[in-house]
Image (cartoon, rainbow, N blue to C red; front, side, top):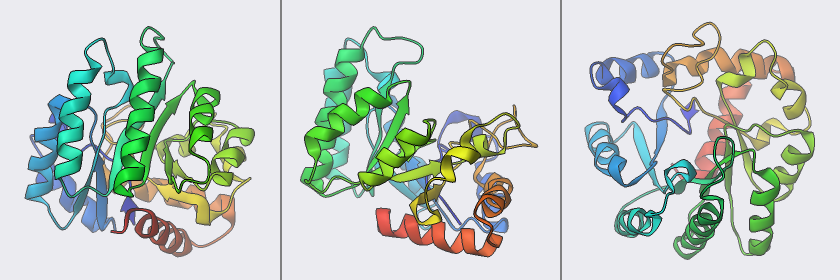
Length: 253
């Protein structure tokens, strides 16, 4: 399995990062993708990758909730690292209007800028979209037929949105939320194919049942796979095989 979205470089893992990596490997997670969030996280990201170079790949971007009145400075730091580094994607980028719309316009500027970088570098994008699917699709429409590709990480939209995302050639990132009792996600992803799905944890966030409320980690993908298997009526090994192939296709890892 490949965890296509995890933040094990964050301070939540400073005390036991080696153990977390070993747990992942023991639970058949062979590789992870580490998306950046802001200018301050760049050094942490690289230190983690340098410690586990065969286990990790990195993505570079400015997260929408990190966009503020000083976004140009943050964006410059991210651009410098993106264009000088060996990253597999531009991310984590997107729009998040869930808590605060103060910097909504700035988020759109930052997203558009980073989408253009992705095209320039021929890299996929890792999209964070929360309460902003219509706005995101509007921006993506400006990039039609230009080869833009990527994943809607931690997908939280409905049937219409998942069909739209797939029609644009994007993958759907699925993690712990799929295991929650009242989640509508199972009925949503029934409308796409396993070939459209990537596995992810978004660790340390969104732990699957039975670890909900606790710190997440890549090893917990093992709790997501059986739910996917049930939805698509296939063996766990098939979910592992196809989602791993999907990840390798998108990120070239």
